[in-house]
Image 1: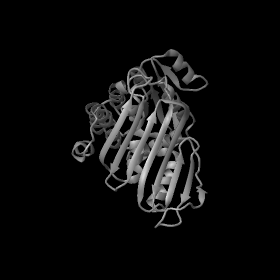
Image 2: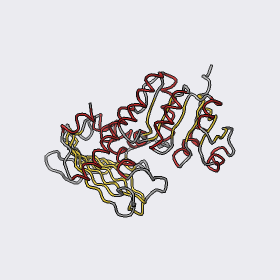
Image 3: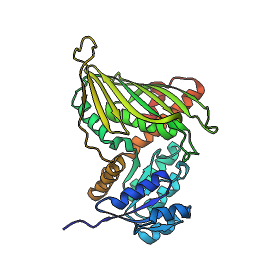
Image 4: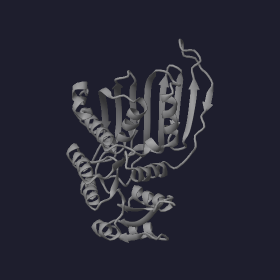
Length: 332
């Protein structure tokens, strides 16, 4: 006998919220029962052709539909009240990244989930990209040997959806989280530079350098100034280099046949079973709800990613290096 469908709802119908509604509506074992947004037109688009009911008030949605799973995709500044409201209504919550604008609000969300006995997870979607999953499996298997460097390029034009944070807090948590996830190591030193070229409220260009306890060096190149979208990650080690393309989900290995001297070797395209990362993320969240956990991405990991990004913004503004002592309270 099959299990009853998980009742799901989405609060916030911007670009990511609308995508969550689309995927949840199509996901096996899930019944999208409602969506909420202050924008009536957004609500209309999200409910058109679907059985989900639309609301302009999240409280009314929660009281009427009693969802078991709620996606919170409102602006970062509103994550805390929306998440607390959903938890108080008895729902398990996936909140989009960054988890919160600061430590205090993130810790309040984590404490509320623990008190309510509900799962809180965070939408670090890049962990669920099949190319990154396959890369993680191969790194864990030792295919590269010792990892020397990991480099993330996340470039593109300014997104109209973002108004409350700069490029670092909006995008760097993705790459900081993926680096920790792939390397299974913590940063011990960080340095960053930012610039504010076109986006007049916050920084729109970021370059970061991270030294990990494993000895690997992380490089982050992120901006909202490039007229074409780039989402790539390269990992260089003693046996060669992996290049993962988040957009195409391609994973390519460039071999170094000589471990003593680096020489050109064969290029091999690794097999990746392509799937929409958001569908993978939400499927694993549903499985966690059914099994009682753990969350697909722990809120503690999401808190660390946000705090590391915030620390890099501060370091760039002050022109300082973030030391191991500075990082200790973040990683504790």
